[in-house]
Image (cartoon, rainbow, N blue to C red; front, side, top):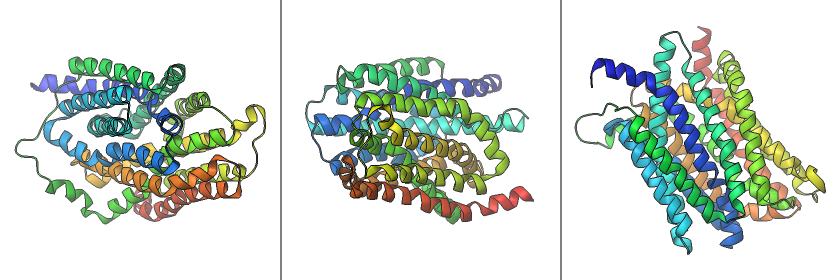
Length: 413
């Protein structure tokens, strides 16, 4: 590839990657938020089993990001992104056509593996393009990640709406529609995604583990994992709260639309505010908001729900606080990763970040999924489940004040 075509490819990355995130999220949010309801109501599984399967789906995606990032570093982002689309299509087809539990479980895991292939590759490309933009005096890297989140949330507005419209036809019809969305994405990316550089030689496991030779980075990704665990409760715990309040699965779509609208409107202003305030202040605040999202539901969980639209108030409060916390955490945290990595092996570093989150989701859902069974009906035990969920991000809020202190001192210098 010539120098001129390489320069042209770099300029193509940001809009192409933002558009990819939009389409990917439409396909994702049309299906995955309704998976827990399908497993509980149609497959008649208990809370711990639903939590385990949802956790396995998340772990197969976020937990495998380290592998996906390393593969993208070795073989080039384009090839891995296209492979990821094919794998996710296969997973959705299994969800759509499976008539017993094990094909459904395998399909759920394959949807995760597909995301583990294309997501870190896209994030690494955006980090490089954003760094070039920032060095050129244009939009900063954190602002590019904020725009990335906005485009993703625009897809998250349309995805639940599509899923809600298809809910009357059954979950498996929605999964088939999700597969169609990713087929379209695969065709577009095959013809428009530029060729990317790949490393020569064999793929070695050892360089992946050099990512963990930085104690502060390891502490950072462990604390960060509480974010993914908390946000994953939109797929596991939020349907439980809707059941407690006497709401239906059709109310899930509008709640995801609420989260997406908040991000579309507030993400860029909050990203600029966070950049001025610094990671040492913003990350603890963001995790504290995640904790408050669960503590707020705990205040209502023991009492019978009111009639009318007010029954959705705890769920709306939970979604709002989780979304505000996410908007503060993600752009700042994503911008810190290249500082740990020194702009080397970015795919592996972003993969390690998400892999630790995937482990947290799998372990946390397995341990706390059974507690959520008690939250299906109003009782004091229902409140305890939400308190336990809130303790996890609260611990990370405390940890981030220590982990990010050197960045604040560097900023002051």
